[in-house]
Figure 1 (cartoon, rainbow, N blue to C red):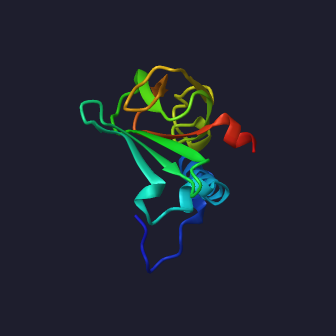
Figure 2 (tube, rainbow, N blue to C red):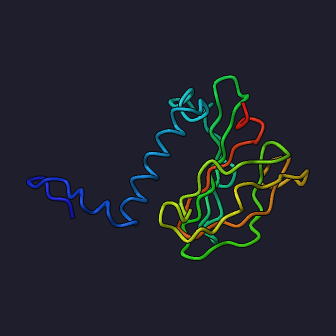
Length: 154
């Protein structure tokens, strides 16, 4: 536990778990700065859309963040269960390939590395009141951020 009267224990960064947390926060900050959907409409309901707020049985929440002009969006899928969710179908606002912006279970951050090999493909199967959906693996106790691959390339 951190003690305000002592120095920050920097030597803990020698352990992969601590270095992984540092790297995760660094990457979160970088992605946040680079992607307008996270911050352009931060203080309005127009920048946020629930996709799946009601899956308490699986401990999963899904929402989207949208840029001011509506052209850029990211989708957050959070699995609060201590088990992976295999073949979980999630509704998405756009079809085609989506890239994992971030997976908090990445081995790079000290996680188990459970995920979707960096991408998923949304097909024209309506789900969660969205026109498209994709089947994916949700890592346990983790969050996955997705972005349309076309947005990532720009």
